Length: 202
Image (cartoon, rainbow, N blue to C red; front, side, top):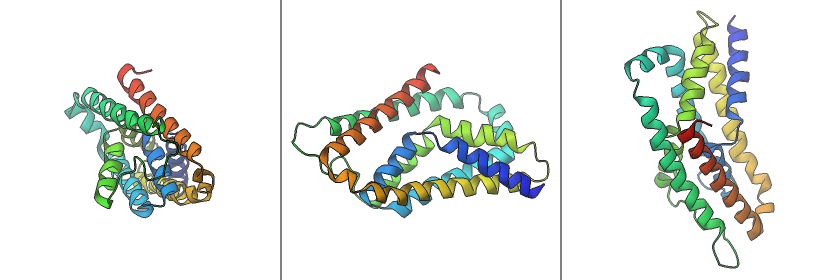
């Protein structure tokens, strides 16, 4: 039972986190820059671990106590993602002939971590994936919920560190200014698409 729960937690957690999102795009960008990669990957994975544990142990009680939480988080998350997307699109459309990897980058460890955590904790989808979905699936393994949570947490750590450090292999491609412009444009459009999805439930 413990092995089955851990394996299910790992595969389910990995499948949920693979989708391109604001958090993943930020980790990819930091990996390409080679800046604070460990801290950013650890912050994302540790945040997931906390949310997974909450989902496995008490997501039903939270939903019952705070019914207003979902609409508030949707509006706040959408506003934040819209602003971040606009910032990325501005960087992609700068009139200068070249775009340095430093342009639009967040400077300083604490500012970088602050933005990383905001992209994580202000995104309602992360709660749907970790707290609600994983919390619900874990009930299929009575007595082995913590093993399920451990598997899902391992998937999160594996994914984020692979994404952050694996991005270094793509760095030669992004030495070209056009590549950075395209990346910034894609990130900006992804942010806006998620914001619209939050607002209209598409």
